[in-house]
Length: 263
Image (tube, rainbow, N blue to C red; front, side):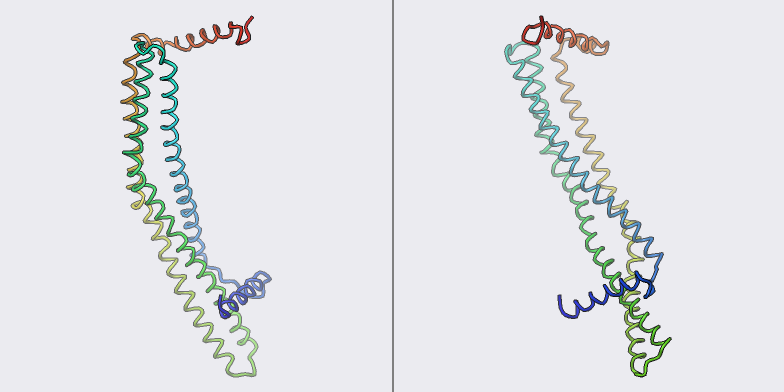
């Protein structure tokens, strides 16, 4: 930081302190405050959306990978008799979820990145730039409040030096001009930024729905094919609640084994 920059920082810190103690009047701009408040909500929501979209993708990726590992284990369980219905269904299940796992990466990863992840990243990349403008605006407001206070004091109590008042007036006018320019720019453009959110995110929202639908439809299609390896009565037994009873029956048989704590 240059000496001039350091001096300005010190002066602004002093102005802030004097404002807190009521010695310098603070400019209150309700219009800017309202627009900044809306922008902060939008900034927070976009950052949360970016975080959640990444978590969603990671969760989907983890789910398909875990599903593939489950299928591998199930195929191992039924591997004793390769010609049994259980072995054929276990193999069909593994083949189906492997297809889902590889297809998930092959068919959805690139579209998800280009239509959802990257647009979110680009939007969030604007926020540091906008925040820099807001910070600059706030600094120039401190300069303006300081210059206004200085001018008011000279008007209320004129100095013996006749050059002080014109110089203070010039500093006041210049500070006000710079502040007004930044302030008006933000008041005008912050609402425009928020108004663009719907047309900007519309394609990403549509893409998210389409990809979720595609994943669900393909999963249903592939896994439905596994059902043909089960006995015809299995579906009816499931609907009638008989499968739960079968599980409870097997559990009871396990409890009766000595190694499981039975008598």
